[in-house]
Amino acid sequence: MSVAPLLRKIFLVDLIKGLSVTFRSQHPDELITEQYPLERPWIAERYRGQPRMAVNPDTGESLCNGCGACALACPEKLITVTSDRDPVTKKKYMTSYTYDVSRCMFCGLCQESCPTDCIELSQDYEMALYSREGMTLDRVRLEKGPEPTEYAR
Ligand code: SF4
Ligand code: SF4
Image (cartoon, rainbow, N blue to C red; front, side):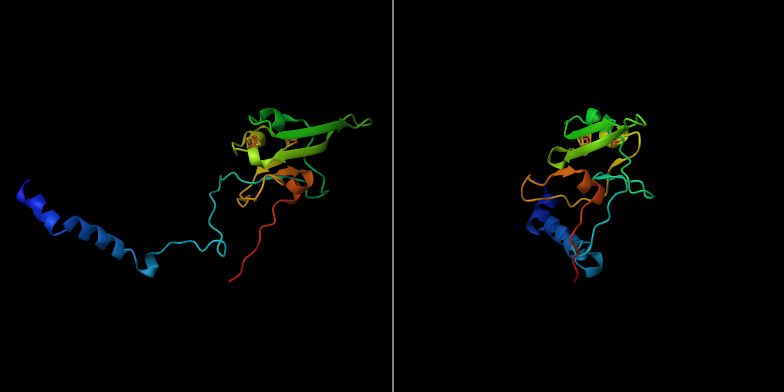
């Protein structure tokens, strides 16, 4: 071994250089730790999280027409839609809708296939539960959305 690398080893030059970087970053102004859950993190605009179902803001009625395109598009087959047809108008309408979040991989194909922009993967990310029970969302829960706990200092 030549002299220079040997001296570097003896005087722990690399260790001291590394520690100097570490200590330079210890000033409180440098810290970027997010104080979750007191402070909610910034979520990327295109983040895909908890599914939501949209309703007509004027009438409160679901925008879902029961076409079943989302269920067909889903590679996990975790959406079930049932529908019926109005005998007078002959229009199809959704009678029930379930979404098993525990199997979802948040690929977004369901929302891409929806002709009415009814199903949407929102920016809500707090979906953890202690068991799989309760992870199958029905129409009411999908329309209502999650109710995250608000924490205060
Ligand atoms: S995000 Fe993907 S896996 Fe989840 S329900 Fe939609 S299509 Fe299925
Ligand atoms: S959510 Fe959209 S794609 Fe799925 S059944 Fe309703 S209207 Fe059709």
